[in-house]
Image (tube, rainbow, N blue to C red):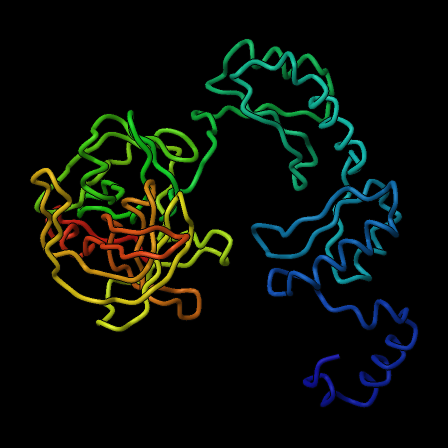
Length: 362
């Protein structure tokens, strides 16, 4: 009972007290459940009602119009239990168990499902199992309707789902004749997406793939003199992220910007051959002669180790609360990750400026 009712007349107060005394303890204590309740509170209420209602339980949901936590029941006599728990009761035809059986029956027919059937699921609020059919394809409609179940509804969709995969700094990318690593994800002012990596990798040309499939074609390359290049992300299944893989050293870190780490500061690099390795910045603007006339200017020298295949991978600042500053892309070096070595990176800011790009950050 809210405080504003305490100022009513004596007779109304007595009546309220009597009503409260007659109510069951659970009903008197129940707090209305809606979208403002915590996920734990709603999950506990759902599990309690699922158990107590048994075969009369018909799923639960937050009503999109009112925000009220709603529970379906197939027996109107059980609605009071739902209301006593603070939820809204809705009497429906099919129990949760019945809808689950319908869905499982469709699952069992997967061998015969045409590609135009893009999926099926339980719609709790509608108390139905919904089969999604692409553009009303007759074969898809026939497959769905073959179940002959009254709990089933067909919905028409205009686009088929596709598997999605993340492009993450330091992970492998494959050219026609070699493997390198992702540097960073970036985009231009028009929203076109790119992967930045080493120029001696993009010089290989062609269409590039990653851990989850095709990324897209090489769209720009500068090597020697510089060592940066870009791959245009043409795949709709490849998701550009601000993440860099730390492999066995910990969870992925998030690129927050591109503030330069000073000489003597800690930097780490990620690559598909040797994973996550750290060292310090030793010098800026070094000219490196890779032999055969391949001279690159403006590289940053570090004590982090690297090996073939790490090329193009992300160089970042020390990790602070899961976030890093992008430094550059692994270019080359000497030594290895067994005996130690020196590694150079191409500063990322030069590549961003050259192609008019902005990093994905988080």
